[in-house]
Amino acid sequence: KDEINWAILKNINVYIDQIKILSDININLRCGENILILGPNGSGKSTFLKLLNRSIYPIISNDSSFKLFNKENINVWELRKKIGFLFKEMEQRVNNGVNLYDVISSGFSGIFNSRYSNLLSEREKVKLNNLITEWELSTIIYNEFQSLSDGQKRRGLLARALVYEPDILVLDEPFSNLDIKSNYILNQNLNKLINQSVNIIYVTHNIDSILPKTNRVILIKEGKILKDGNPFELIRTETISDLFSISIKIIEQDGYWRMIPSNS
Image 1 (tube, helix red, strand yellow):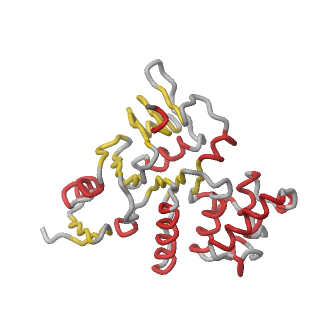
Image 2 (cartoon, one colour; image 1 turned 180 degrees about the vertical axis):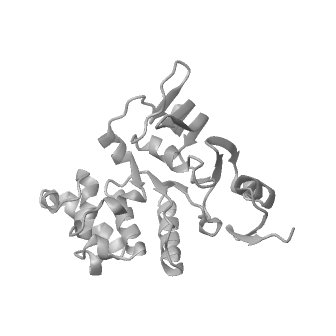
């Protein structure tokens, strides 16, 4: 039965600088799900994703366990071949002078540096070129990463997350700061990946950016899982108003959601 769960979290608590960020997280993430994590700022959403890329570790206790792909201890490189990650802070981590090609090829080495781009195997180079074409990055591939627009940076980092052709993509606020066109293109691209049976787990603040193929929603508030279920049951006026402590109205159309102020 566990093959269908790629992550199993039991009684997970996370502290950062002695502050409890996540408490009593009990959840299984299953293959075949596209999962949205929704919640106010500071509720622990990004921390939850960082558990999955092993950059944050939970407090270990007798009754807690955390398994990825059925293993308590999984090597980071083994993990990268199964899950692609995109975190907002990656954009800031790229030094000036590093071009987009080197950023994408760092998906193989973990290091943003042209020296490593020269060490790629022929097979890796072919993969990179396919991604560059597919994500329409050829015209800007040797431009300095930090000179690119937010939308271009995001597409580049997504290409980087896909170098190992992972089955799962973990995305932290992929839509933040994007203009309407970039948002639209990214939405289309992610839908295309979902159609190629990549599973996506993502955080967004923006109701308008929810991917139409999302089939599970986890609502997090103050470090706890508030609700977990089907988007059509959870992305509703009362639930979302309660989650964000505001009075709004939610409208759904063809699997896309909109938020408008409520008159109450």
